[in-house]
Image 1 (cartoon, one colour):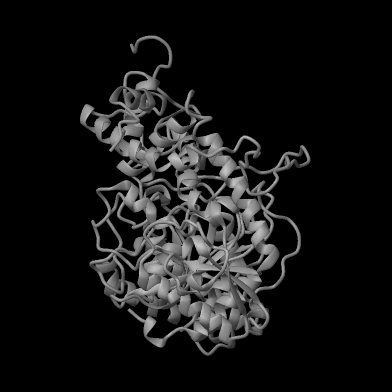
Image 2 (cartoon, one colour; image 1 turned 45 degrees about the vertical axis):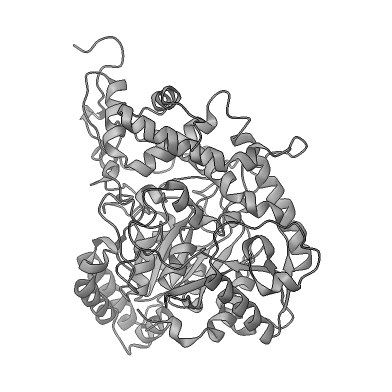
Length: 495
Length: 100
């Protein structure tokens, strides 16, 4: 049952929120030992919340648009009095003294929080193998990763543990796991959703986004969590266009640009003019490109005009991101010093205590990124690396603005391949980083992007295609996503 | 794999980052970070002198509010999460000089 279907049934009294919840809790206890999507299941708290929704319905009180809908939260979203670990030893047992704004908004929309999902430690990774509490497995094939870093949230939706989940996306961490698990994942415009209570990784890139089994549910969740928040100084003020109401309007006349740099090998590139000398990002598999071409054809069949566009700086995105994001992370993670919260390893003096606590509390990938970021910001290297990466960001914003003068949305792959086997990329950090090559540009520009399942690769595993648009274009992106959803082959479905 | 970063440089960065590593770990990190920086040679080689940096997707303006007393986080709830507390304050090991 979809999230919107549940909300309608609960509002009409056809089903109780408690009954819906128990059905999902039963699925969790049946299969989560195998999948490992959750760090914590909040059965008692969720039952209390579900009973409150049912009581409100029976009193005839107004209930929200997500009444009785079970939602899973990535475990880097603060929940007051409830452990929030970031899948790190550093924060094991930490109980935040406040709720994230998105958590408050979900509750006031009537949603029922079912639990906290696994992630790559502090959201750094692309496979959910960097969790201090063990990996999450892909519900479609448990020998494979669910992607990351929001792998627990993606797996929870794919396995039917919750119809909705929240993830966070700094370089693709909502969209890439959504693609690998065959669900919908939206990275909203930077500032569209409040980051208050999201444990910071890279503050100029982080954005919270919904994951769902279908486009309408993702759109409804986005509407529920977005909006201005005085507690986040980067939150965008002003009225927003509705998203759910326009989902059925189709794409007749929509101008779609296939991004040449993300689609090496596409038949459309060979037919297009003026692309001589275009270099493309590395490693996007042929079966993934074939699905992107099929998505382009489906949009055309629905009345859209598809052309090929070039965004040359897209090939620089990965390098720029892996300088900017670690630089911001090295600064953000300086707060874990063993003083106010988190792990402390005692030592004779404060400086030693800081070093011992951080050395014991952080895992290998987090340390690697702190080292990389500290290096990129250190004297003598700042101008050569970090300062240049910031200029790549300007270049990318300029080129995207030029592209959006001619097209409404951009199309490309979400992830370079389908889900890979556990352990396949853990020995080579750079190989793992390449997973983000198609998703990173939207984080650097702050623009929204959505991954939609669109059939399977040669191995029978889900492929996601990515739609990208200018700032605050979520209504258009999700409308186009709804067209793709309708056109997608039916076998791209259930695990 | 290139040796852009030596073990000594990695050790220096680790000190800046308040992290401790064994020599083996430093060697491995130096090699891994060198590989990432090799990949970043495309950015390093770019002539971007006439392009302004973008540190943030939106033009940021200072956000202020009226200077009024408002409820803040509950002190006991905050201190309950600290590793060590004394008399309503965070307690830390000695900061100056040798430990007693």
